[in-house]
Amino acid sequence: MNHPRLAFILHGQRCPRSLPNRLLETFSREFRVDIHITTSGSSAEELALAAVTQGCDFLVAVGGDGTIHEVINGVMRAPEALRERVAVGALPYGTGNDFVRSLGVSDSVSQLYRLVTDRQVRRIDLGKLTRADGTVMWFGNIASVGISSAIVERVKRLPRWLPAAVAFYFSIIATLLSYRARKMRLTLDGVAQPEESCVSLCVANGRYFGSGLGIAPMARLDDGLLEVVMIRNANSWDFIRFLPTLRKAQPVLHPKVRYLSGKVVELEAGASAVEVDGELAGQAPVRIEVAASALRCLSALV
Image (cartoon, rainbow, N blue to C red):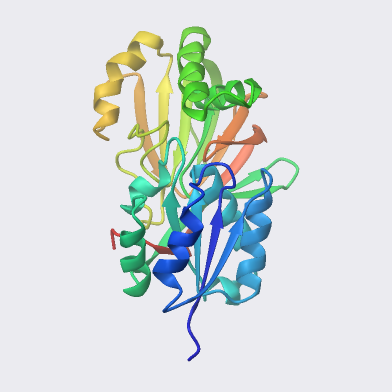
């Protein structure tokens, strides 16, 4: 019998050692299972491209938002005909696990088994970020400039032996206390917006970032739009006041917060760093556009 092909790409440091055997025991009766374990910071992208090129039917990223981000970029490098064959899934084993919140999936192997065997696949949009040098990066969740990218920069400078959660939360606190607003200029669907002094500007496909903060409560993965969230000249105390509302993924009704939506965003913010799904993606200026229905994805929310 010609079983469908299922490939797993596991983060080499984050995933439990017993997990590969558990995945084999769960799926090998009904699928041809390939398990790949990452060995470097970018190997998930190359492994994903190879898996799609070899004709896998399901490709599951096992790790955090960074691993999922790499897998998506590897898939999008493959020819369109092969991308149309594969369904991408996620089994979250990271610190924040923000993208999967919008998919309604957890770290349950039994839930993943149901999603795969029931073929519970939906098409989702992706964000396409293009830098000034023409380099393209795809994202499923959120791209941002401001305090969030400064947090990622700080995390990257910390010693690697620190636990990921410790490094992340230390960086949040330290950045909140020191970050100052910067001038940002936005063009949305060809219409220039007034220049704003912002501490954060997010271009969102998914709803959550920062380990569960619902920064873009109106964002949907399949509506063909990007949500833009601008947090104007706010201070650390403002952020603390906003936190309960953000945790509930509800709109912040405050003059310092502005919500927009559109399909193409052109962003200038000096030489500010840009982060995409928790990974540094160079510096502004950047162009971000929505790629509607670009990815076939396993989701509990169909």
